[in-house]
Image (cartoon, rainbow, N blue to C red):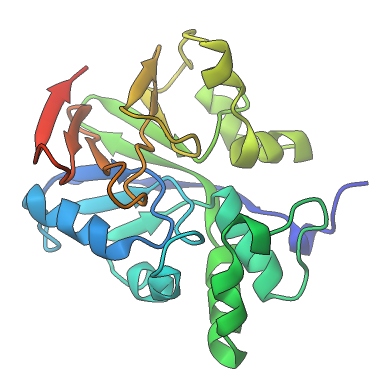
Length: 245
């Protein structure tokens, strides 16, 4: 039996028109490492006045600054979709924890320290995050889904999504594990996080950009320029680097 609609992820596909004033970037899983993310943004000269940042989800859990999530969601240039950790967090915060996964054992202990109205606000804001976004760029649409795209045609994301499709969006690693390089139709590129990799991986027109910027001393944030599909790497031992697919 599917969970009640009130406990499911927001199945909306949100569209963003082209940014003609500045740049658009996507970033992988943040996991409460907002200071490290800010350093990465500073390193690429990110301009809050003209640029936009799109998160592929997992804003919270594991990192020390998960409690700052509301501050970031209030930034007019920051836009996020729902990841599986955001989903677990809002379910826990609103009093309906997931029964088939232990949120506290998967980085959710920080939420125990959040009480009252703030806990409610965090739950409500994360519950409102859509499962997918698309951004118009000069060379075509770029889609964002946290874990995996359940369809081989982006147009299908505009139709009502089944429970299995939503589950795929939040949790699946199938495309990556299978090395499936078949392109997703009717979209220039689709961007995912969810699976932490040493470097960005590209399969067909699908970009996996979680490179562990939330892991102190181990990873770095990958900031994917959605207009050019150029990946800029945030600070690490070797400093800022870039490469073009």
